[in-house]
Image (tube, rainbow, N blue to C red):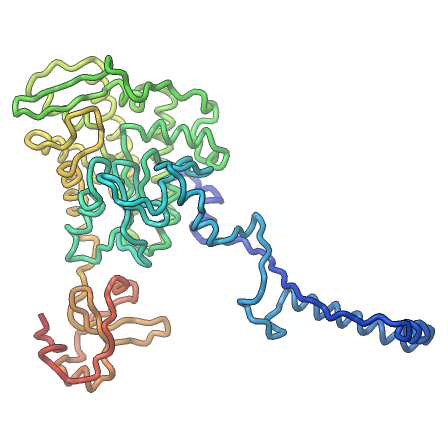
Length: 487
């Protein structure tokens, strides 16, 4: 597949091109006392040519000083923190945008957004299988300066039906504990490929070693179509200009009970399938085909933007519950509805085609989740017993295990012992690292006195120790506490 041209807006975001705004400073001029004697003197002097010259020169100097105070106040010794910046559309007030009171006080879990259509409530507390959310509205307990892995997705990645510790991004972090694996989740229910592309640009700010983008075949095609064709900001992603937002097929949500297929397997596992609902995003329909193409194009754009950077780009597709249980349904010789058979056939074809397109990208890997989930479903409870299409903890565990296997060889091992931290001026600071703690040595004599040698010290970047706690400077010789035998 030929990689589509990346829109200028996306390239601009990727290279962090910022809009500049001109600030203005304000000052108060001293009042002039107005008296008749002063007026008389001024009127008399104005008759003199030298006074006119002097006055015009003074006015010119005042104008020049005023311009300097406006455009370059630093030249006059005005502190930057005392300069005033006018609020306008080019530079909205920063803190008012981050701590929006209408967001923090809202009673809604999902909020509206002009670009991403929806976003999650910031600082939402941990309530059962929802939350907690960080200040950006993502499901994390903190916003790190550095994230080794950023995971982008929808509610399947958010982790409906599971606590934050049971969703797959956080299980993934635990499974990769021997690696530099600080994981940050950027997932919101209702998102699709367009939002994933948008968040990918923001994810680059965390300097990740790997970015995982998880599509969901259950609704991403139609949600991607809806946003690309419905919001002018994303028109550059439209693959077929002959279609419009009105061409999206009608879907009944939630699906009526007449469209349910309740199943109880021989081992007692129960669930309810909704094949008609999920078929809507996998049927042979122009909008669905365009939706899958938007997904492929978004992946290609992410790959192209990430190419110059040392980032491992991983794509995957989380399948529908219906496709996950397809092998078990066939094994037990159940007779499914026609929509179920059609869904599982078309969905598998769509995933295979998307995987083929992604695998042709120069710096991207595709991880298959269908096969391992189908195998696990033969013996384990992966989904709730009702119509909910989100996995439970065991289902998320399968996803985390497969992704961890793929990432294991792509991430460096967590530093232990002494390391040399490379600074910007090419100087090196020797540090002692143990678990998530780090110390600096005062000087070479203290370093050698504690039993270390200068040979073979691994070189790391400051970002490699961003998640480590700084415990101070080692200024004494105590090999038991600071030497190679440290446990």
